[in-house]
Length: 487
Image (tube, rainbow, N blue to C red; front, top):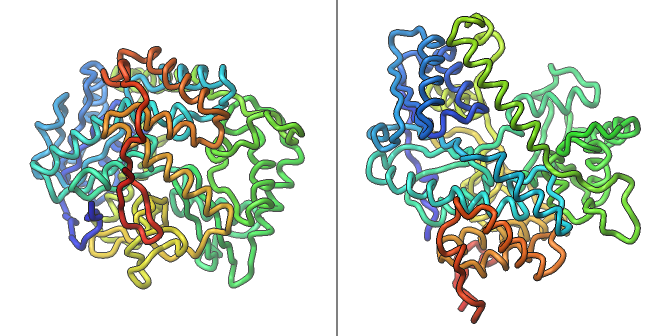
């Protein structure tokens, strides 16, 4: 299927219609409400909040009506996304049903068989099963958009971002991107300057090149006024690691030490270490010679549940009047998606890290990462040009790290093809390829056990699989990015 996601098309409007599907996902729904209340480009917008949980939707609607005082804003809330898709300009997906509940199953069953996931939302068994639970819904929404708002931009927040993005690129006919808030600009750049003791006033002199599959991203270049400062950044992480203690939270444990160690190994710096460390076999505790840091611990589902519960308590406090709305306005900020939408509406010069195909770069229309194919779905630094998000040139991945990028992309591609072909054996293949899975037998047991534990959320074909037979059909990537079929 040809990539049609980023053809020239100016979608900017002064009064956009924004549909948020999964508004009850509190990591994004509250920020969207705040953004519409505060950002000037949204003063006359139409905001549509969609959630299938009527109780949570009612609470978000009450919060929105308290927060948004502009008479020009039209607010609509519904459980049926189709009721609000007509004439939409932007559709944001941020749903994940019973996320922490299923994530706990995936991480704990994985750990039982020696697969340790410190985040458990992108790679490993959790990445595959999260895609299984949500991709059909995403594709259903995309097909509805093809009919009701074909010119809209779909912005996906649902993890695994790269897997979902590949699925939309291959199987839908709408324009789409995927977002992750790890590399929100300019905060990401300022963070590295602060790390090495440089003033934020030098931001424009800092040339930072980051790219990679989402959650497996790397800084390939860092120059400050023409001077290579990547070694300084690496040394700063190493220095911070010297006093590192086991803080307990799985995603953050020993990240400074691991960042410096991986930089030494690959010659590039991991920029999302809390996720990246679970993509590699080094920190699983299986080596004959152990690493300096202990094996990964499993994602803290209890803490995530507690954070979500506290967010709802805050919202209940606002809508009951026990907490002042001035606190909401002072404590919140806009999120990555609403910032990006606002930039597309008002035409400012902000740039964004966006997950999209490795093509149509600003400088020459070619590849952003030279030694990966056009259809590699990567997180890239992008500029908005005529309503289109186009990436800047990045350079090339060093050998070894380039192979890892291909490896992760193939796992994501296989996951989507397994779902589209309703073929559990393709998912076994995808999980067998995972860098932290230690045998085919392990992959097969993980697929079986997790599918049974999550039976209520599984399609029938996952619960009654066909017997393994001849090699199933799957999509492969050639060196020039063309699609071929294996038979």
